[in-house]
Image (cartoon, rainbow, N blue to C red; front, side):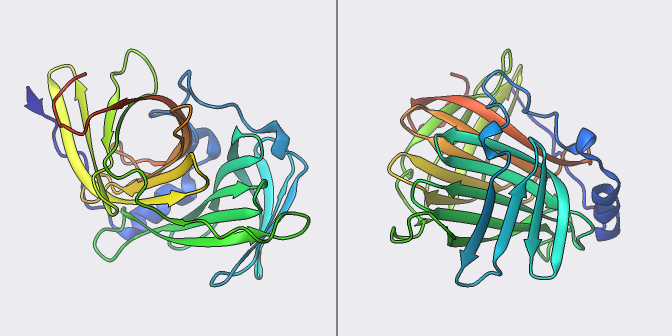
Length: 273
């Protein structure tokens, strides 16, 4: 069994910016672990909806979903029409991701909005963390959906509910499952095996509770490719929807959605399944 080689190099901020600026949705919104049989379809129920999200410590955001992949958003003086990918993991609970065109450094947003409770979680992310220009940095904001939605539920927040659990996630065959080990409130570990090569790593992670069975699990591949992985997990059905955004191992900008089926397992780190 051989260890997989290191997959990244330091990339100057100017090169990261160029890769972001020159990439089109046709290039950045597919590939990798995307397009598998467990990926959810685009959320047709989003089309025509308008949301206003309000937070205590972030500017108000407004969104209008014009078709399956076009949305208009406004944040303060910034207004754009952009490509997005959006999915409905269960009735009334939406996940979507989009970039901010022309942003310096490159930036993108990942949103989980629950119309059943009137609550929203925003992940406000950008490239560069003071160490590597290609590594993603982010902040989390918890807020409410304005208008005719419930306004009394407690805001989403960080949780330790998943700590101590482990799941094999299968994105597509014949690719073997990836084992996620939710080891602490601030880290996770994973194991993957490809033929006679293996990779094991631990990375900073965050866990957010949406309801009694839906959880956000998100990480940054620190000192690897620097990519952000983001997953909205249904622990009842062991199915997820998520995205990878960053500069990938081929040194191209990516921001695409994924879906996987899961199988609960133990935390022990043995190779293979």
